[in-house]
Length: 78
Image (tube, rainbow, N blue to C red; front, side, top):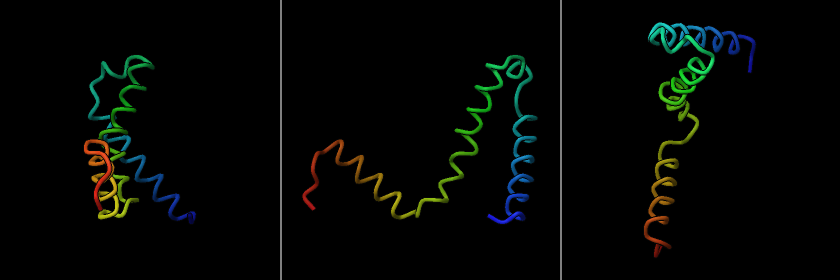
């Protein structure tokens, strides 16, 4: 990763953190436990799903669908 890319990531992450912080009710930020739970929730709900860019769309869908089908139906005939 280039220094420019690292700087861009830092800038974007800082902007995301500001948005998520402003959208968080104050009572969730009163304890370390509340802060940790809030950060985890934001990462799982807002940030994580966007990182699926790493997965090729058709492959990811087909692999997940096939795995789920095998779990429900057993071995597939093809």
